[in-house]
Image (cartoon, rainbow, N blue to C red):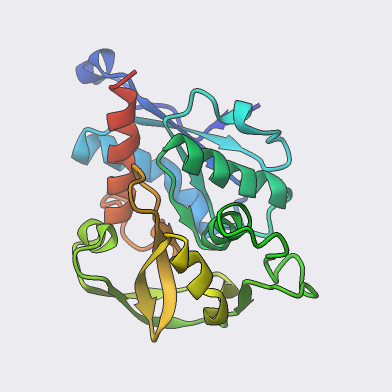
Length: 247
């Protein structure tokens, strides 16, 4: 069963007139993953500062059986904390969001699983694998990334630049793997846009025409003070809230 991230703000008269967006946080909740401790205060800040009301629920990949488990959610977030207990479930969550036009950010390890889903189901690279889970794979899309900090350059006019509000930003990576640049051409040739790079290496992937589908190798969750959610978090919250008002 999904579990809530935090109770909704109380004693606010606007809440009685607002239907919250429901988002699924897909991954294994752990106090040892700093990003996971940030969701509750970020949700509070989104309401207090932006009037974006979001109810978030944890869904473990070990309990996620398929698309039906994501029915009723206005957005999905494939969160940091890989290797996931169920790689297939994580990939399935991405595919469901992609095919249903459901807003989805995939961050840190989620970034690589979003690329893995696209490689397998759009590019027909059935042997594509994440080296973290399948180090002996003949087609490992990822490779090692040591504790790295670098300047991320966004593509002019891209949704990533619009969401970040800047052409360049410095990011530190908690993920131990990154996309192997040798395999970047195939997803790009099939329509995936790689809209931000660090020293030539892809750091953000987006899907044109999708409601909201940026995947980031860096983690936006712990980047700022919790009273000021990262611009990508605000942009994501706006997309499910907009979706919830349509139903």
